[in-house]
Length: 484
Image 1 (cartoon, rainbow, N blue to C red):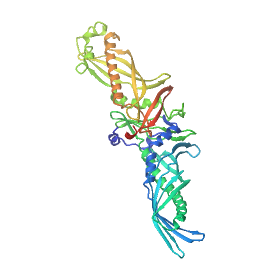
Image 2 (cartoon, rainbow, N blue to C red):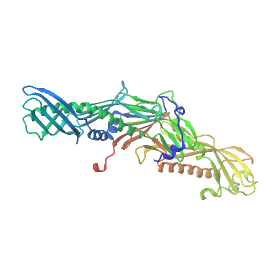
Image 3 (cartoon, rainbow, N blue to C red):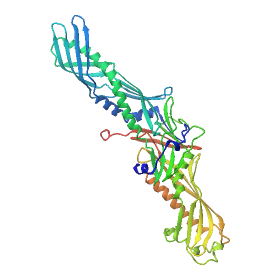
Image 4 (cartoon, rainbow, N blue to C red):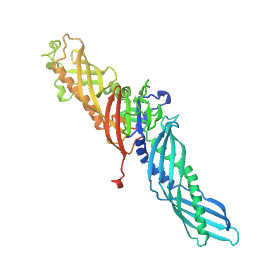
């Protein structure tokens, strides 16, 4: 999606948001889901570790029967690695996401210089290599709203690297000191990696996590010129087996906006064991869908000259005279329907469906006689949720359609809702349905899935717990081309 034009249209300040932990939109991710999400970027962290530059380290050691030995290790590098295990958990007490990368066991290379200080002096220099065993990187991250931008950001509270053991081989030396240096360098390199690995890891994890969280798109376009700002302004909650992101936000149409409501009662945490669970209150959906339609998507004139052929045949009084007494005495004339939305569409979550309804008034005008009557026209659609072509959106798919039609007032006497009028409005209603279908086909009307990206969804299910729409799904990281 291209969001650049939206950013130029709108300016959002923190004052526009309801800073309420009970926001109307909530994304919960189980620890299993957090582990799979972490797997989409863990290679970036470990690649960053492998590319890190470690400072040289010098030291000395008193060796029995030998005396003082000095040494310097430089150009320490981590090369290839294999990840043995990955686990993401949550810590409700400290409000942190904990990611453990275990047994990633990189290979290491380094240069060394060693000297026996006392007489007889011995000098050694060369290269070293080795493989780490039981190397583990444990990261603790607090994800929270940025106080200025309100977009989620990270604080890396700790990053600890531990190494159980290391095989060391030295190359280039020839004296009996080599065996002694192997033992010294082994403990020295492990100590350096644990100290510097924690420092380098903190920097790398912050960079990678910041990049991941920046994919939480603050503006989501769901119709032409219509946006929903889904910034995180409520809270991040850490349970025993999940992390939940509660959002409020603003819906916009061009220069007009409406703040999403804060709720008196928090949305659910989890309803089953699926990795991703989205809960959205009907008021939030109402605001999302209603913003654009309220300002023009469901209003305008239908005239014979511009109407579709299936409707144009109804747009003259000659076709109405046989069934509507009030029109019989009027001269033959073309008709225009002026459609005006009474209010924004309304959304209700029922036990078996999501329902979107539109209430409008329609003024029937004759080209000669002027205003003839005003009708109340209501249309309604049920919607289900399906996955879109990308992993950042669950789409609304509007399926069934119904309408109600009644006379509000008449200026020509007896004006009844009968066959020709009913047929004409069914054509109009079908046009609205086609518009909603076009939004679905264009993947532009749906529920966003912030944070989760580069994954493939499965087992998607929609359930209804009035007034809350619930979407649950499992997901797996997308496979790269060489994995397929």
